Image (cartoon, rainbow, N blue to C red; front, side):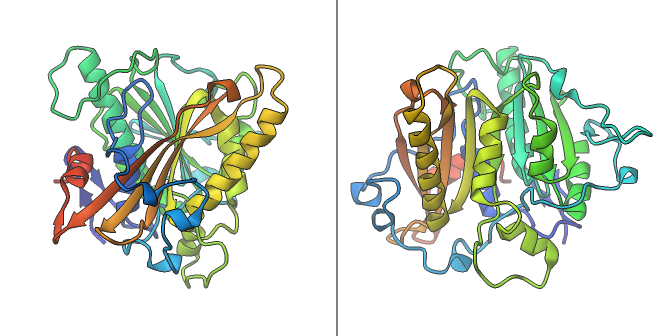
Length: 365
């Protein structure tokens, strides 16, 4: 399959099992970049009947078989467990750095996680696949940095929120277990046009990456994004790579939440896109974890994820939501955010809606 061209970058996808898809583009455009306002805000939900309690499935409609949800399918493959890449496959490629280089004793070298610019936005893309979400986030950070420096840029700039993160542009880490997807991601990161953004590709599972970055002195991430696998108990694809990308066998929701919470900085953002049923299940797990934290929150060290934004994505009008985009903030229970609910209808009367066009307008040609 050929490459996919965006306004500022190109995505080659010759080796990836999962190609560029609508889910990834939606999340990359919607997620809030730390240090800016909610530039991806698509507006509040108009019909209160569509929302209600975030874990009440009756309030958001049924998606039926998840295989039918948003026909472009889910997913750049997520960081599932597996073997670390052979050392011969790694190294430095342009402005993309494989962070898993090993010396003769097998020790990891070149890991910048403990030697980072505190002014940079640190981003982790879990299951990067072709790297499209990481590239979209990189474009947005670079655009904002140009605005902050007084450079003349296009209309994609996002308004600053006064946060002290981001003036040094971005450092984006991408975790991916599939070797074919890593080949594509490395090529795509290497050809990225933004000098203020550095990309670091880790060919390993999220579990392995988290274990290597659990040291208290390791710099945390301001933003973690993921277009994760979501099939829990369903027929598997004949392609092992597609099965890894779509099924939760080796990266469960609990593991995704646990490791993301650990790797995220206080005040940092964790964002995912999922089918409605799986998204509601993730919300239930987050709320259970938060309640457990509240029970033991006698000290300021008790931090947890709390939902801050939920967007119900409808492919067309008058049909139930097919996707949930979810954003969480890691904070103390006393600082939990006010939940903001949004609704996005992608098409109306056979045409893209103004909201959808505005959301992805800085990316699609």
